[in-house]
Length: 505
Image (tube, rainbow, N blue to C red; front, side):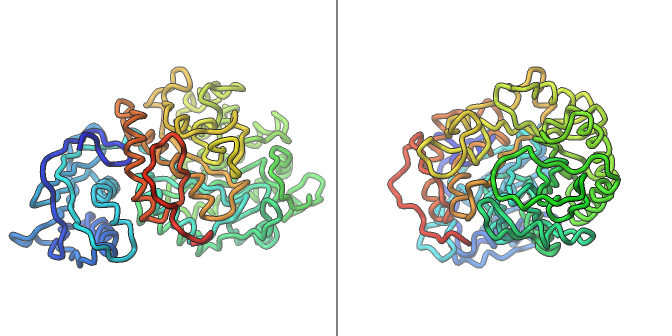
């Protein structure tokens, strides 16, 4: 073994000789805050192994054990240490979230068959290795647009499980747009009664009840993933404007929208009712969201004058911040010099900035914020892989290959913006052309694996040839987990058939 068979690549990996054999007598030992991670590990391993994998809170002398502990790892950033010998597996981490990340590395060192949901006839051998590891960025995200096309709670939970495998820890849910409003708000019930009934192409739409949303948040938390809800304002609001005529300046509701154009809608900036509406929505969504972030959108507000936009952002961000959240906005929001301290910007321009995007980034940083980097021509997962692909769009300078998704550096985009200014990276999936889980995963994999490596691994560990070799070796794992993926020409994939799965989970 000359390279770590782990995604994303760890900071340090050293292969030993021999292996640890997982058997029906193996015990998982954990105490305190390590116990929930131990339970997760046992639930992960039991289906394919058939082993009981009891959780022990006290050491059993002489028993083969997987030892999970939380304590200081003495690394530059919070991380984990994984040591596998012929007689023992020891995983130590600075906190429960990093312990969970270390479990994903252990999972990936097991035979690919561990991903099956039924008992497999396999020798469950784990190679002897030493890994010391920690993430480059604390925010490692993926975004799912459920507004253009709606996705069920089951599909979102499935996506969260895929994210966990890759050590991603933030799910940004784009909940509102011109085509649909997807979260119930008690004080404005028509947002879902009327505004959730449409989707791109005239689909049936849908929305999350508060119980649905809470189920998603709780499942995410069990995977140490934070949910960031986005209420996109003042543009991208046709669904809200159609549901409530009084939110329009002329009091007349527009028709529901099922196309894919942007920039034509806007809340009425001059009406006080607009700000009561925002206060109610931000309050209710904040009450449902234990995470620290609330995303306000702010992008592509082409129907709003510059003067109105700046006034709106001043008032809307103050209202949102009053509900105790750290705010995130797309980089256009950096036009404002009145952002609450610490507001985070999300950059969606290109690897080479355009249209003053670099100036907007500087504005966030000057006002005490940091950046999430999501350059559209590298990490937008809805871009076509190739021109002849049926799914996806091409507006971000054409198709986005796996090579383009992997070979960029977040700290080399905007002059003067280094790792210390970057909160993390996020890979968005917009869903204009995607309406089922099979297509979703096809567009996401394998490019999201590249995104995860950029977010986690040190820049010095990035190696295109090594990455594609590891990715090829991952193919049986993807199949065992029934993950649909694009077998891009850039990778020498082994000869295996795509997993058979329906379009819904």
